[in-house]
Image 1 (cartoon, rainbow, N blue to C red):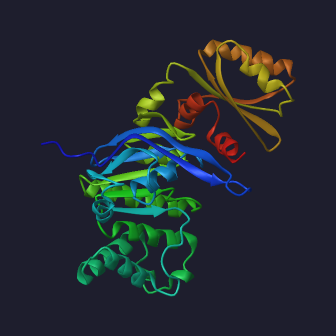
Image 2 (image 1 turned 30 degrees about the vertical axis):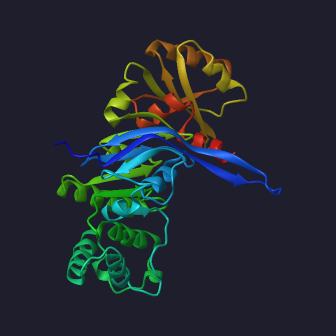
Image 3 (image 1 turned 90 degrees about the horizontal axis):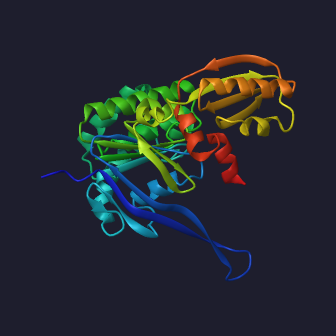
Length: 337
């Protein structure tokens, strides 16, 4: 008998009703449209997309915090809308930037309290607290009030809180958001090891950090504007672009209209322009190496000097640009507009 998928969604959709300024006036915002995903047990699965893409809405539905408008979702074989009482004991969730817990309680007291919410006995709870605090480097802060912790240390406590119940499925919503490099690295290392030590457990990670998704995830679903555009392993997603030639050009500042001239050149599939520190960076996806000569000619016609030129292998950022037509940062800006 085959085991049920850890997570499965079928034509899942969510529409928010937004009240207008006038009485009775309302409009709709589509957050998710026809999301179909299946995550087997034991997988480290990633949702990669900009802020506002629908990642958090999807996690809220999967964790029974929000009802879907259309379709359905199953977690650990149970319907999240009709059987939330069966789903909740089997999952846990950690969000980046959250300030969970009570500031006047110590780290240990907060974690013990969360263990009680899940019905853990005191002996098991304290044993897990000791083990997990040691792993994430918080053992010496067990008796520190949560309000006295730095942002990075508080997030490490939140990570421990998310794993202390030994859940079947863990949802991590931007868990390293706003953290420094060291704290982010510690959290990624812990989560990766936790999953490796527990075959059959499943982690779903949402992130807009390309490197994080590429480092951690067995498979990644690229999501934008509420739709899943692709779902595969990072290697297979990047393999789609391996026939293309990908270059990064750094030039003197480009004048108005130069970028449009490059985009209209034969063989140029995508151009992403990033101005910084008195110069311009162009990330180019070309159909072949020979197309580069036309780009260089266009640069010369706009009196731009080439400062550096590098050919490189495809990244998940390139995959996102190819599918969405803009970079992750540009997509986030577009979502805010």
